[in-house]
Amino acid sequence: MKKGIFWILPTGVLTVTISCDSDGNIIKPLELLLNAKTGTTYNHKLTWESISKDITGGHSYNYYPRGRVEIRNNKAIIYLNPTIGENYIEDIKELFELGNIETVIKKDGSEHYRCSLD
Image (tube, rainbow, N blue to C red; front, side, top):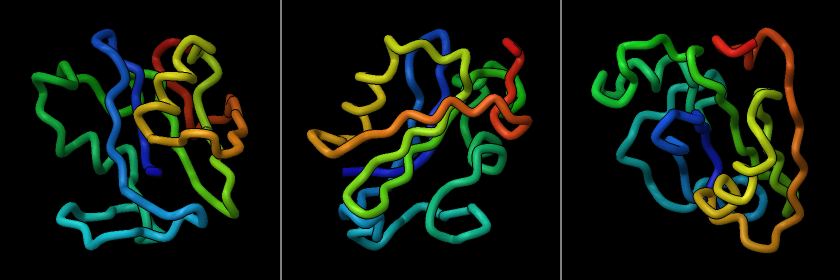
């Protein structure tokens, strides 16, 4: 099971994940810097800046639709930009190894998840 962030790129789903237990606690020590304010996950903007321009196309972090997977109390919450179609949900669940855990989808149309498609 994993938590973390993702973007929907023309080439597929790009994820940056952390292995965790069913309460969202990190399982193993990390080699990557967790850069969110909480210190327990990733910040989209800061993480995007560390990704090769071969992948980002030189676009800003909020160019492509994006989202986040949080794990709490044996439940996965997938926060995402509303332009992300239902056809990506199973891919996201698989990439984050969510298995049969209860999953809630929260389409977030706020400024926080806006992208060039909005």
